[in-house]
Image 1 (cartoon, rainbow, N blue to C red):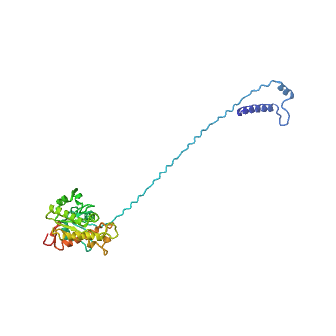
Image 2: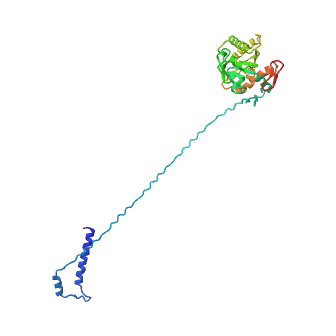
Image 3: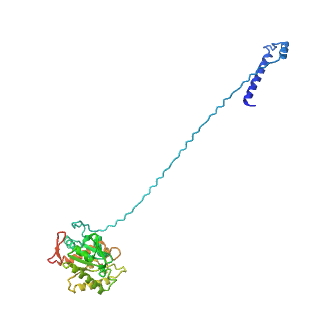
Length: 324
């Protein structure tokens, strides 16, 4: 039976036993307090039992245990730092720095410095030519207006090209008319020696000189020699270059037209008749910045120092002798 019923039953039984014990109890002497007759009377009487039912109510307490589970989410932020290392290779090239007034902070290597007198002459001169000649402008040896030159040009094809002059592109004839220099030095030929014969080279050069002279009759025109190359390049040979230089020099000094020849190769050569490596631009053909000071110094010695040219430069300095 259930727990509650068991408890009620035991309670009733306990009451009956206690009642019976009280009726049949003895005194301390062990004798019965009731005589047998009384016991008989009591036994024969109907017994009315009042059953008191005790209901034990067990309150069942339901404890609801609420377990709060706290979930902690840990967010790990991983910061990846990417370090970019930029390696800057700075090639220091010694070049001239000019201002609008023609002030220079570098004048060339020892023994080939461009003095103020030389600069005065150069300010009145425009150099016309190929990529080697263009180094005068690229390396800022001279102001832009003093150099009309582009790559691949030669005496044979110069009229097919345009040149950057004052923000525009013009042919060689108009460029020189626009700049109106007092002196013009033509510096080209490296692109001709493998494309023309010596005779064609001389003829092409004379056509160029005659055309420019017709446009600028007061300008003095000069041809600079083809510069040497390193002996280890396959482009050509210095012996061949020397032969082309000799051909144009001989013609200019004998044809009576008044055009001059300038040797710019001598001081650029080493003991083996090749381009001195310190003057090589890297490919054995083009020139390094330092080489242009040697190049210009030779021209100034041949013209300014000898008095073949004279005048006042744009820097206000006088140069040369009594002739122009």
